[in-house]
Length: 440
Image 1 (cartoon, rainbow, N blue to C red):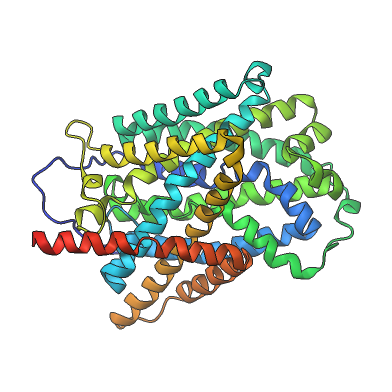
Image 2 (cartoon, rainbow, N blue to C red):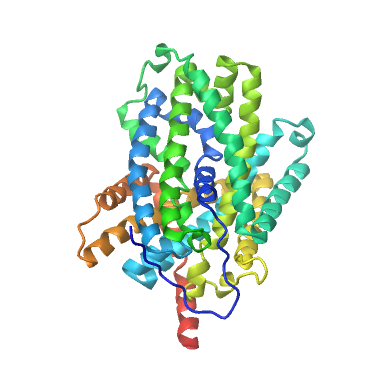
């Protein structure tokens, strides 16, 4: 396949370094998907859908296959950092591109605060001292954030190697435990199959969609990927496939190994299923895997948060400082520092109990805004194909409809507030456009 490249505006400053291999790209995608959510989602699904949740996994997997195909196709054609922003600008112009980069960047920076609290939450189970000290928990969260930020400033190659190690320490144990648990599946645990009605299938899919957040990861650091578009394309599809296999094995294993009521009441359903079917040691393995996996997810999304606004900032459509590249390491160091600082401040909201509800609501909005880039990417693939006189790729309209469907499944309140979060960026767009015009 012949690929094209959307080149950034010429600069005289330092350049990005190509250091992310195919294995690193796959590890980035898998790590950003198989993160914190997979370890708690079975309990949420058991409450919402019952065993029907297995079909919610299937529905979401099919929908995200189309989303992955869209990103694989666009990533092969437009090899520029920023992913969805690049495609939206190519298809629809500056304003649509700003909406994408604004919602995506806000989502990633806020989301990192939630991810690091999940890491600490898993670690608490292994230390009574940590569990009894909010100060130690806060200090650990800050060390994780800034330590991984430093790793990412040091270089994309180092960050990619970290992700490869995380993938090896997470995927293998989870698959082995999940496959072992499949031998203890009891058909009776699948009855009644839809205790809350078949209408909960969509609500289940809206929950599962968060596990697939990150399928687009390969496209965001595109300029730092070795062999460019070809690696982005292959890495996206391989990462999607590995994550989907893990999701399905664990979903069926947990649902079949435990009664639905037990799953719904558990804060650690996968570990519980492992203990019940394999042995107490398997629960410990799952707990360690949860810590390692969520740390990898945090590293992956810190990497993403530094690259999401990179091209937009270089184009004058986002804060210009976020386009600065480190002269020695070739990484977007200012973008990484700013995104980490925002997550660091938000941790204060989490540890102030009176503001915990505010923090949780902000995180909910962050999750909703991850869908906006997917919607624009699907529409961009559709629009570009029509503009070039090509037959519309089947994946594009199907991905667009699917993303709309899961947005609907998140509920009217979340969609309304999510829309307001996107529109809140309008004054920023007006300000940046004014500065761009004045400097022209």
